[in-house]
Amino acid sequence: MNTQARRKSDKQASPNPRPATALRLKAPGSLCVSIIVMASSLTFHANGAEPQSGIPSISTETFEQLWNLATLHKDARNPFLQEFKLRGRYHGQYWNVDDATGSQSDWEDRRSRFGFDAKLFEKKLEVRADFQSNDGFEDIYDGLVDAYLRWKPASWLSITAGKTKPLIGQYDFLESSNAQPTFERSQIFNQLGISRATALTMEGTRNEWSWRAGVYSNDTPSTTGGSGAFGEGEFGDFNGGISASLGAGYDFKNIMRLEKADIRLDWLHSDREPGDLVQGKYDDIIAASFGLKQDSVGVVMEVYYAAGGDGDNSNVFGFYIQPTYDLLPNQLQLVGRYSYASSAGPFGVVGQGRHERSVAANGGRGDTYHALYGGIQYFIYGDKLKLLAGTEWARISGDEVAFDGFTFLTGMRFSF
Image 1 (tube, rainbow, N blue to C red):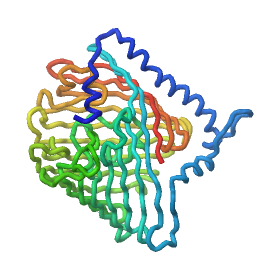
Image 2 (cartoon, rainbow, N blue to C red):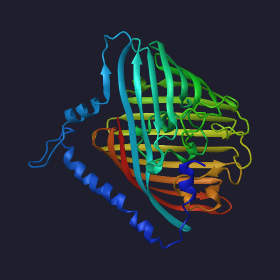
Image 3 (tube, helix red, strand yellow):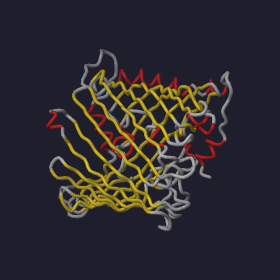
Image 4 (tube, helix red, strand yellow):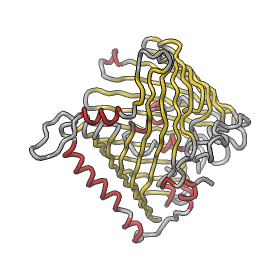
């Protein structure tokens, strides 16, 4: 059992009233609130507003200079290596979950990663490698996250080989977690068992159309669980099942005269085998993605349908709608989300594993899921440095109610 799993298994749901330890753990949340107040005074100038007299400010140029320190080499005239830069991220958050059965709270080092990007041979070849630590940094190295080569033989085509994301779930999965406006991905996506895998993928574009396809090894160790020391099966042994994906998209922003307007349809098929570490819960998953943005308003929607599971993993359908509104351009943003899921079987819907299931009955399983999230993002330096806070109400029901409560979260996102 990996370190993250051991830490979670040691946490037991506590009956109300909340224990004193939960109260003590509110300190990180209070710290985040204090940081928000201080950051607001430091970022007026960075976001284009005039700083008040006597209040320190950090200019956009200063942030750019700091972040540019990660670029160790950049020379377009070099015939071999045009760019080499370090990459990393830290996502930390305080969470507090309450429902009728109990409450839990803690500070979590949600993501901590470090690696590099390189561009070679007139930028036609890209190399990426990064690894992760785990909660509490108990293991500095807890497995590879991304490790791939990407070749771009033409402006409209890219071919990727290595450990990377399966090409499905445009907004909830394929877009970087640095840019996600909520703390966690949607419930429906999180229960599907999709994770990075050793793969060969192709992506192409033609005018407003785009397409993508990939083949994946299901015995690749999941990045959500770590994989031990470097070299011990980081890419799997290719002895498990094989998955394949196929998808297409259309960009219709010019038709709608919007900043952004696109739609995608993706399909992931898995020839599953016992013991598969990823893509091992369902035979087929279909995802439809839709996004619009104009000025201060944006909305994304994704719909998922998964079929061909075993046991409690009965056919499941779900979707989420996620609007955003910029209160202050490039500085303060409101975020909302409604999530829904239903299953053919009585236990085919699974609540959020990171928080809700820590106190839920029946292992957090039922046949229906509803959730409402409301939150805010404060951008200090865009998505590269920001603070977030949000609250989500969720209900998991079936023959009985497994969970009906609230999760409060506050934290930070830092990346370079």
